[in-house]
Image: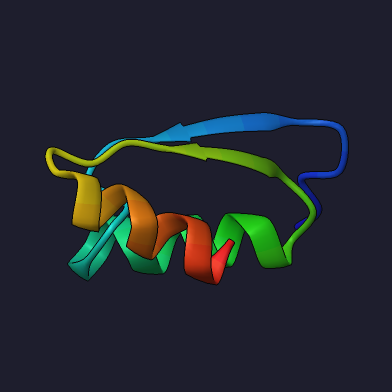
Length: 49
């Protein structure tokens, strides 16, 4: 399934299930916006997206 042209908001995207979902959506073409509760979590999202 392609998510080209779609935007996905993923909460808890810095680790665990949220990260797996964000990575999968990005791999399938979505533009992903991820949230985290700490600066280090936000940095982790930036590193893999």
